Image (tube, rainbow, N blue to C red; front, side, top):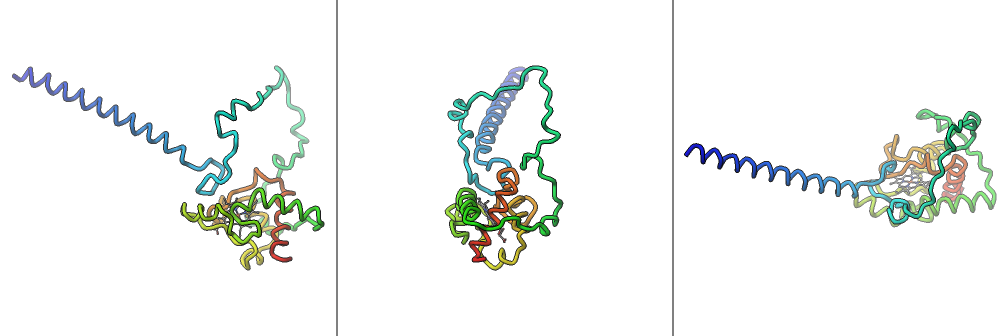
Amino acid sequence: MSHIAGIGSDKLGAGRSTRRALLLVVVLIVAIAATGCLAKSGSYAPIDWAAEMHYSQSYRAQEPPRLSSPLGAVPFKFASDTRELTREPAIGPGGYSALTNPVTRTAATSAAGAELFRVNCSMCHGTEGLGDGRVSAFLLAYGSAPAANVTGAGTVSRTDGEIFELIVQGGATSTLLGMPAFQNLLSPSDRWLLVDYIRELQGN
Ligand code: HEC
């Protein structure tokens, strides 16, 4: 009797561990699927506001192959490399506010600033900077602050350096929610063109 019961409980044990293994598999599948809903890294926005073509496997397959350097090649250019994005000096918190805008406004700088704003900012801040871009509603729905009205008194009273810093850092170090960091996306001269264009939108 006890022998049969023993077999029975063994079977019960086996059934339980199979169920547990199945549950684990299901939980894993759900967890992996759920990561697909997360915003891409590097963004402080709660939604992926700038999907890029190379996210897609079908596009990735068509990207040209990257050539690797020849065997034994030694890098020699980097010490004097002056590329803006990689060689930008680190500025500590607060160090930005003293920076002055180097842009002297001409029709060309104004047009360049407008184009940069249209491509990088208007989806959230709206074409006139009023904070009424179409993505702003999504930011609100996902628990972020709506995009700011950059023509309002709050931004007017900031220094050029402070606006420059907000564009660099986004929500990374400031209290701004949902504002992406453009440090690695826009060169310093592009950012200054944008600061100047925001001043223009403010009527200055
Ligand atoms: C994904 C949407 C989004 C994009 C794209 C975006 N912003 Fe923002 N931005 C925000 C949000 C949201 C805030 C306000 C956050 C808050 O109030 O906490 C903000 C705040 C700001 C502020 C601060 C306003 C103030 O004085 O407090 C500035 C300046 C600004 N953005 C400039 C820009 C510029 C320039 C670009 C383009 C290079 C840009 N933003 C792109 C969402 C965005």
